Length: 150
Image 1 (cartoon, one colour):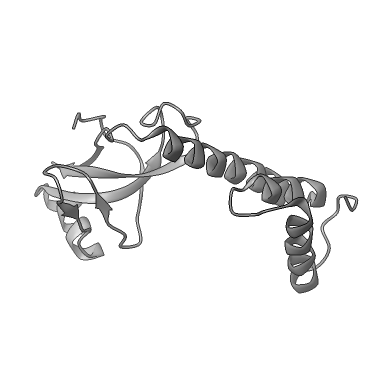
Image 2: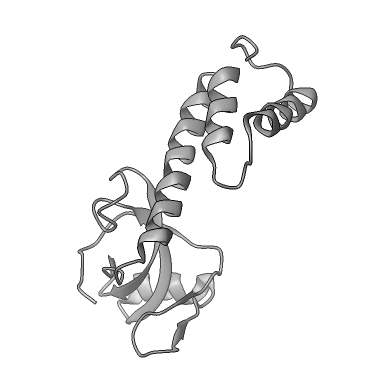
């Protein structure tokens, strides 16, 4: 894999990634102390990180967060270029990234219609009716959103 340079990082929550390096090899992130020690001392570490895409996955917007394998070397986090994804996986990731962007904007603007549209765009939400019911549940728990009801 090719080094993509150091980036700002929000470390993952202990998830693993298969398919990097030798076939069948799983990269399992070590604990927070190991990552902190690697950043502090410069000792090398291979781990999984969440970084701003910035072109790592060319089919996704640059501003979305992606989870990738990375080397921590000399106190810098260096995301590794991921292997190419099958077309069906890329389509699903693109849809989820679009949902994330739509949902964030809608939530920040308290836009009910936008929240319903965002949820309806998610591949795991089967219909606009289900999206409306999900937003209804959120409103019952946290209060109404400002946008008009779709």
